[in-house]
Image 1: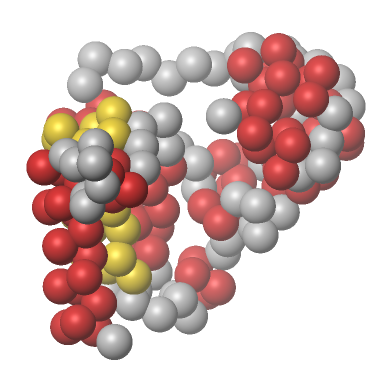
Image 2 (image 1 turned 180 degrees about the vertical axis):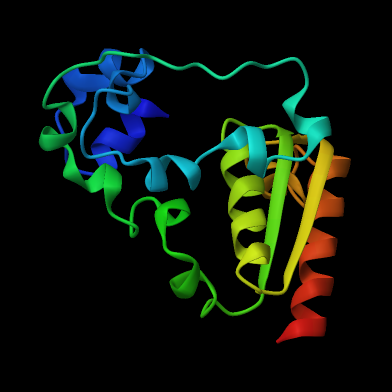
Amino acid sequence: MARYLLQYLGADTSLEPLLLANNHSSLDQPAISAKIRSKLDWTTLLPGERKKHFRPVIKETGSPGLLDQVMAFLDVRASPLLAEQEVLSRTPKAYMLTCEFDVLRDDGLMYARRLQDAGVTVTSDHYEDGFHACMVFAYTPMMSSVGQRSMNNFIRWLDQNL
């Protein structure tokens, strides 16, 4: 995902090892204030059953100037979790689908929580047996039950909310 994010942001993909080592989020990065960090604090934004036995990975020192090379990391258009509450509060009602076996699971759960905290009506469906892009496997030769359930629930939400 780090490589894809760098490509999406038009950044140098040789920075990938630095991201994987969390050098971009180290405590010595002056661009990341305590306020910004609070918007990404999974220890408070994730439900207890999703935290499991995990511990926060906190790096004291990282790579100086790394965020200067990829300023888009702090742009809310690339990282909507960083948006202010008053901006999030203007978001229309939302449907969040998260899967247990998805690298983006925590981001989705944290975003749903931030939206809810901002007063947005959020329907959040989590699939314990789900995997990234499982909905693609709803009605294909490689059909999966979780793909069918997720697609059916999403269509039901659309019917009831649009």
